[in-house]
Image (tube, each protein chain N blue to C red):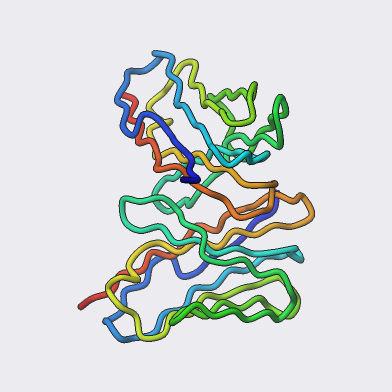
Length: 112
Length: 110
């Protein structure tokens, strides 16, 4: 089954404790992207990747890192999480940058 | 970067009433996509519009792309409780990247 798998679904952590949210897709998609969703603000892009070893900042990259060492994986790293990063995060992939996106189920992160 | 305005932010309708959400851009778009996110779920792709003036239908849903390729609408005829959720447009311009509108949250009252 074609899918984007994100883990974990829920995460509660404390300020400053490094964390990684994993994302994997099995559709051989070149493009992958991370979004955060906050009430009233829609989906804001954090980082995206056009292909392996190619990543770029989205609209709200501050406080986040990503890597794309393999085509299928695109982890999101928060080196020092802060409470303003409490949000719902979605990973998505597509054939190319403006193709229809397939979304993961989301990760709800709470930073206290 | 590119901005896409989507209105309204919220819409409450009685079951059986129609619903429309609109997306507008100040720049010409190469394509526009629509997604639906059920409560507690993730966005799911509905449709993509590419051509100027294009109209596509999916059962009770009608999608339109403006003649100038700067605006789009999603119209639902005779809403049902299964239509509840947030509808997002996502637009692509010259940067070949998608920018999402802020979404319209639809509530359908039985």
